Amino acid sequence: MLKIAWFIAIILSVPVIYIAYNYINSLMPGQSKTYALQPVYRLLKFFGKKDDGSNFPSYFFSAGACLFSLIALYMAVSGYNFLFVVSVLSMMDLLVITGAFSSNDFSGRVSAKRGLSRFIIWLFASIVSSATIYKVCRTLKLSEISRLSESNCIIIDLPFTFVSLFIILLMKGNLMHFDFGLSGTEMSVFGDALYSPYSGWSLAVIQMAQWIEMGVWIKILSYFLPVVKSVSYLIISVLYLAFMLLDRFISTVEWKKAARLSWGWAAGMSLINFIYVFYF
Image 1: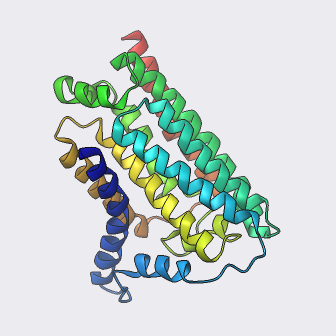
Image 2: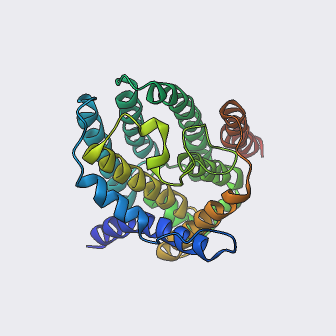
């Protein structure tokens, strides 16, 4: 029953974060009034809109991506092996990229290539992070990591790995200096060129898959904090919201520079943490 509650709560929490962002953003001086429920409204609007039929395979890729995101969420909530969750998320990412690349949409194909660059970086960072986590915890099961974090405060030994995983979350959200040129001027996925080949309900399904994926990463990060898991999840969610708001003041960087920064922070910091725990 607890797992079901977590499952539903995580699915609902990410839209709430975007709603909170819109609401806070609308209160800031000089900003246009933004309808707080706009993310949900747009999702429902796309569900009610017919696909244009120009990229028929996108229907299957979007449905597959959403399915894998739900599987990853179940595994994360159940405390499965960290690498198992990463492998399922990688399948989701590849389906989204393949769906965009299979179309005749030029911006979709270009963004798919950039999405592949981001995929390689976050996957490599995850693998290095898993090696570091195993070195410290002697396990990759998220449930065991959660238990150890409460008793031994393992984040003291994994500070750079924690930052690396959080950088992956920022990359997934196209925030700060980790935007690979996949996003447009809007915060939501609907401003993303990577998703331009999708339309109608397939675009709405991709949006849901992305929200679920963000929830999975927030849940994974919450396992490392030495507090009650509901409080831990809330802390990571608020921290992510803070970076969303901070992103408004960060200049957009060229996507190749974003790739270099991502290698240094995500993959590099995980590697530094691994070297540290290996020798000390």
